[in-house]
Length: 108
Image 1 (cartoon, rainbow, N blue to C red):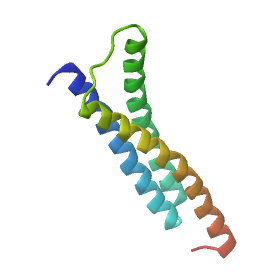
Image 2 (image 1 turned 45 degrees about the horizontal axis):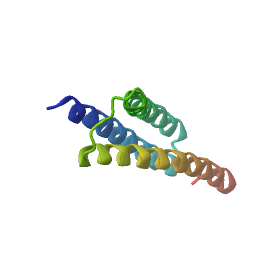
Image 3 (image 1 turned 120 degrees about the vertical axis):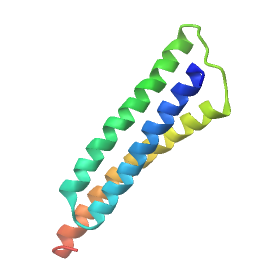
């Protein structure tokens, strides 16, 4: 596998793992398991940060004149990263809403 393909797969893998953990965290929150949900959100963040750092290294290379070759795999990797980022921010709000709903209902 070429270096760029390997980099893309690292981004896709880390972003995908982060997204899965975020969705698991939401399921925990929906069931009122907020501590476990927060643990999963924290774990997800480590994978998201790893993916983002790899992506950032590509941007730095581009800024230094070492352009990355365009490919569908690279476009897919960026798409996965950005979708995970969107889900991450929306999930934080949903997590908060689940907590408020449980407080207002005296439990779920």
